[in-house]
Length: 85
Image (cartoon, rainbow, N blue to C red; front, top):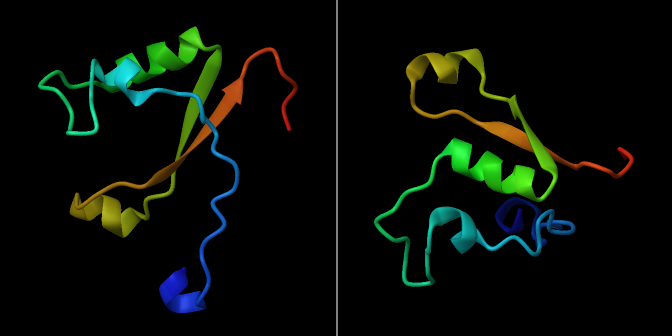
């Protein structure tokens, strides 16, 4: 954004400001992650404990997906017990 528009990007409010990644990854520190890795199931379980559901909307184009280079998407989060916006 800064390079092309000459302005800082507005990142908005953080969605999970109080989420401690170390609680999910099994003890990651500022020095780097521990040998214990996390997986999708662990992240979803941690979100479920906080009454949050996640939905991945894949945005990878067909040509990029076919190359196997990478995948992209948007993760939508919803806290249960609150009305949807």
